[in-house]
Length: 448
Image (cartoon, rainbow, N blue to C red; front, side, top):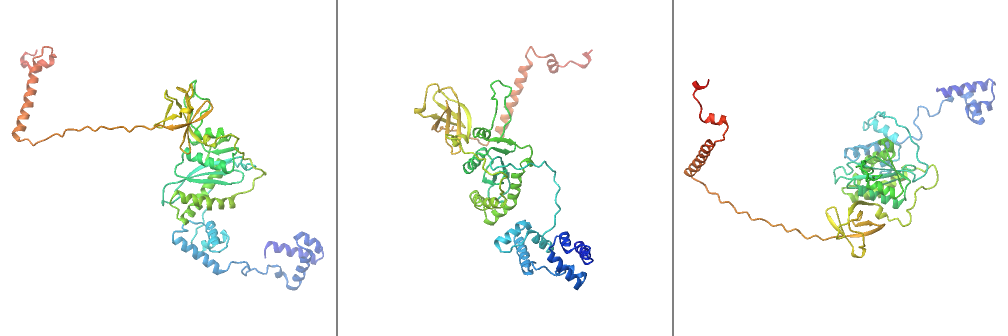
């Protein structure tokens, strides 16, 4: 008999001895007066044993049938042996069994079944370093965490891919895409997709990578700019989006945990569809994974309303999200950039343009533009003449085999030349004394 049943028995003894009423007993046991009356009657007829639960020692009426258990365990064993579910845990396996095979069970039930079948081993939870907890932002769009994950997403079936993700801090709404390079251009494209889809967030939260901040250069010089920004930093400033740098990976833990989940579930989903290139991976990501993520993990914000802002009227998003460099206009109204020459169209040429330092931009579509006096002018690439490379014809040396007598005569000529050079040098008047004594040594008896 459990402690709860003993307490109930004690209260019923008090009722039987008329120390308390049935109403007081019902209030003490949190039961109804009608149920107290029934318990007292059962206890009088059957004794103390009637207070025990009637299903004790018997299987539960809601127990999963043994046939379902055997089918679930066999499916997991077959998938694991076929190297399809070899790295699936009970949580993901329970979801796959429910979606693909119609076996609806909880993850803890499947975990217990797999441990009984020796297909899963209990793991001890790792104790990680604790960090200060930070509350979520109140509204959607107040803060967006932005990062890139480098992982073997295709498991060797294709080229190396990077996953650029942006997740809202208040709602955990995910926006992501696969790219071939973690470059400034690809991150600007991801920012453009987010702005076009949701609007401008109030702030973004990133790490301190060189894409978002650069080391100050020549800060001691009087002509150094007061603020040196990267290309993404300049674009965020023009869009009036605050940039916040994280001092540790745990600070932006929401996007880091999203990447950990993706490195487990997204990899397995790409394996099931056989993705081996960028297009197939992005199709699965946008049509399957992200909708499932937002449907399951997205949560309502603490405060209603959307903090995203629309683009200001007249803002050219193509110009803002571009790569810019400073150049000097040549006397022929051309600028040099990235090994090519670009010219200004004749109708845009104006007085005072030659020799001026201007800003040249390369947009994401590949076009080149020039900023001059609050004007944005299109640039045209100049055609260069192909260089003519003249090949020199070298005369082939005719080598013939010399006889032994010819080789001996050539050797004798070299020795004679060396002897004549030595005799001529010995006749020089300004030779060092030690060389003259070496050529004409004195007898040993005369050295005193």
